[in-house]
Picture 1 (tube, rainbow, N blue to C red):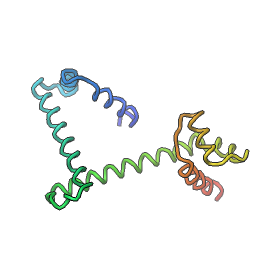
Picture 2 (picture 1 turned 120 degrees about the vertical axis):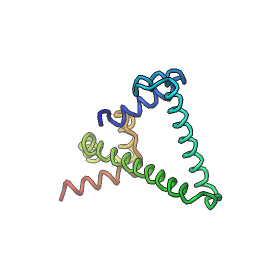
Picture 3 (picture 1 turned 90 degrees about the vertical axis):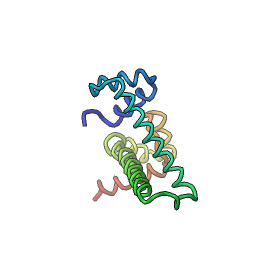
Picture 4 (picture 1 turned 135 degrees about the vertical axis):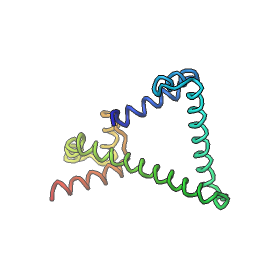
Length: 148
């Protein structure tokens, strides 16, 4: 992929803030399509997002039995995608600790700081937010890998 996940998120946020005419123009430029086709693309995307939103509302209500089998399968696929995203997000924090903060955390632990204090230090000095419990789990896991 040409763009990182962070860059892609940033560009989608920019796209989300655009007016409809700006979005139409952007789609026209990207896909070499007519204005009418660009409007159709926007309509299809909106319809799909609306459908996904409704599926999640049904999933969290007592009306799940009303969903068709096809919608249940789509809902399951959406759930799998969200779980995969969350796991990837969790993996990124692990990688950041491994690559950037491991030795800093080790030094702070040797000075006697607790997990809460270290999590606060990372938030304040490195703009890296993580819970003290998650920090402890990831660090001890990495520590055991290094010491073995």
